[in-house]
Image (cartoon, rainbow, N blue to C red; front, side):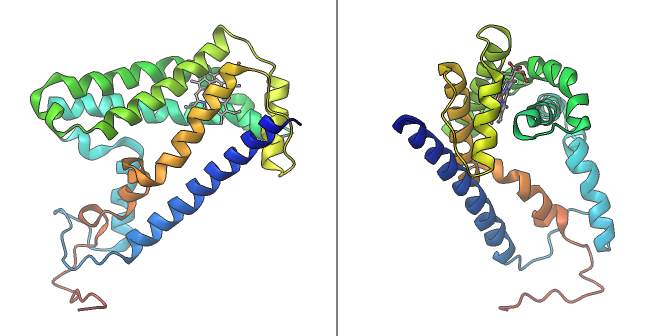
Length: 240
Ligand code: HEM
């Protein structure tokens, strides 16, 4: 393994560590943040089980967006299709990270390719949406465009790898398994793959510091995850 490969492997570990510890740190921070008031959006569940039942359709179908107007419905379409295709792409990618490859990963191979093709279309909806009216343009920050662009580039380089610049997938799998088993090997000899992979590392590093933390935030947002019981139980914060 040459020096460049060693640096690349090291960067991958650093990025993974920043992602894992950064994510856990944010989860802890959310947990410790006081929520001094009962602000559940009513009508809200009166039991913890009710809150779980409220969150499930929210996480699976982004239900509250469907209750909005046309703008929210467009966001729903782009957002939901994006997330589902992302999930299918990740399931297809698991073949690079597992040996032997489990049967369920094999069953997602074909649909994963279709998801890869739909992915940039969903992202295009999300990007165009930010330019469609003054209100969205005003509330859009550089961070919002950056993340959409980064994920689009990951998807497009992936599609190029699949359809135009074929690489040696055996090398790529050996490289990934080397990383996962802490016995790093030489990095694959494919510039396009290294770009695809580096963009993913940037995504991992950026994730805990970005709005992508909504992945966890949706589960602990007080307006949606609080039990609506201020009449039954006196709500006292530990520090009050
Ligand atoms: C955010 C994470 C990622 C996204 C969104 C993503 C997206 C994609 C997409 C859309 C494709 C084209 C469709 C397909 O063949 O599945 C693709 C292909 C590919 N991706 Fe990724 N990818 C990600 C992470 C990774 C990682 C971590 C690796 C490291 C092994 C990787 C390696 C590849 C390879 C080698 C291909 C070509 C597959 C083939 O030729 O059959 N990707 N990626």
